[in-house]
Image (tube, rainbow, N blue to C red; front, side, top):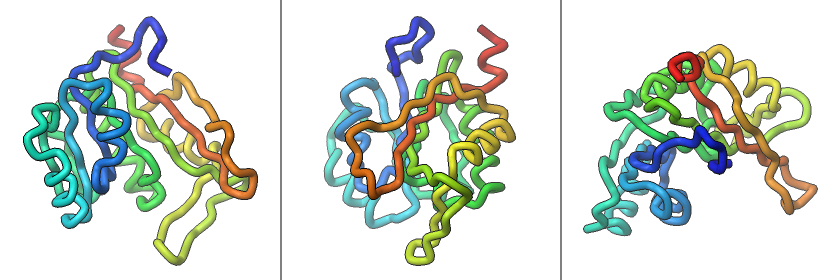
Length: 177
């Protein structure tokens, strides 16, 4: 995904819905100079702070819901993995708008989410929604984002939802290149 000629820089990333830091640890630390983490659950964030104590690559820890999060930095990559289903469509549009404004030139928002085949599917257990790809694409457009690459995760069990990656950039970011 990052082998394009116009790939993002590798300075700063934001892990959204970071939990205890699995994506930060297994993906982002391998590529970025500084990683910020935003997580709603304070106990998860406390665990992440223990895990990454003294790691000079960890920047800010933000304890916040995504619907209320206001990025205070500029990012090369904003990573959202299996967390956007907890936002309403309107909250997701507004969150993505804020993230789009926080992208550096050439920056990307990476979305990795379960995808339903037909229509949104509500999960009453965790109050989340699994959206179809066309619904995500509508939300991305409303947020002023353009899909520049998408892929479906391979080797995933057939009985589970498919998982799709979207690489997005701000429409304004495209016009400034």
